[in-house]
Image 1 (cartoon, rainbow, N blue to C red):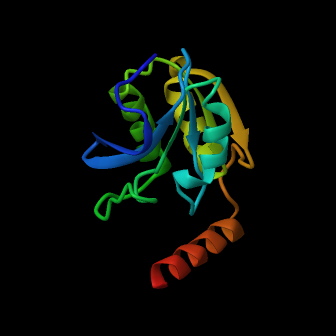
Image 2 (cartoon, rainbow, N blue to C red; image 1 turned 60 degrees about the horizontal axis):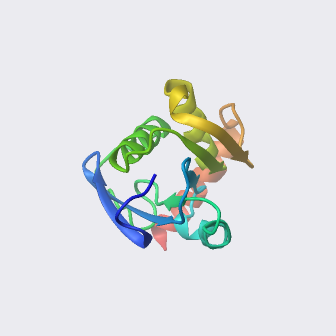
Length: 150
């Protein structure tokens, strides 16, 4: 499916914020890349550039990350999954292959559980399907505190 806007650093309003994304190449079933915490869409640039000759490839900044700023919402995996579906709707994407890394995998699994008919395939990298241990959560919150401080 083709769209008019292609390239890097595009923006689209969804769910009361501006989502920033890259959209390259052509193909019937796009591959959408979802970054991990605390990264942004730029982590996928090499994959997008390599795969764009054969596929439509898309990477976006999750709400609250990269250029997709949102200082007001209470962020959650459910909200991120809702944003993914709204993003697909805005780009007229019926089905996609989703590649989620770490937290991106959590979002992918959440969206798949609630909207299974929207996905052709899932690529889950360095992620899990169970909740983090208390130690892992504590480590993540310490990382968040360091990022906020600096």
